[in-house]
Length: 200
Image (cartoon, rainbow, N blue to C red; front, side, top):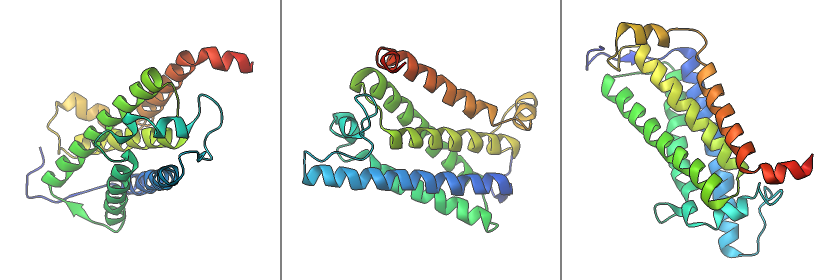
């Protein structure tokens, strides 16, 4: 396990990944925030991502789940992804952080993953509609969580058996988030097959 006072650097690849995922999530959150503001100004406003009855941002934005904590969810994204991008930029510039910082980032991405899993469940089985920008956020959070976990296992920030650390050192780590994306895609296909089948 890494000593608490020892600064832990990040690999260049992981540093860039945090920066890029943070910027992508920030952009998606900004678009959602602007559309939400337009919707509040004009209840009949139709966001550009209202494509069909299933892929419909407007339908999602009008639900209680879109304001899970009493304010629009994209505001959380603006803060969280802005912070993630800033962390990534610092790491790209050569920053190294102590163990508590990496544990805090691990906790933050874990909370984000939990929130995303709840949002996926709500979108599929309660709301019955999908928001493309929200799905971008799902992918970004899954990716950031997974690679943060891999980083923390590889560097000893997270205490783990040697076998688990060896698994984290394998080069094909991208297979895990890709598998998660495929599972979500299959859930979407299954949930809305009644609609997709009419397009065939």
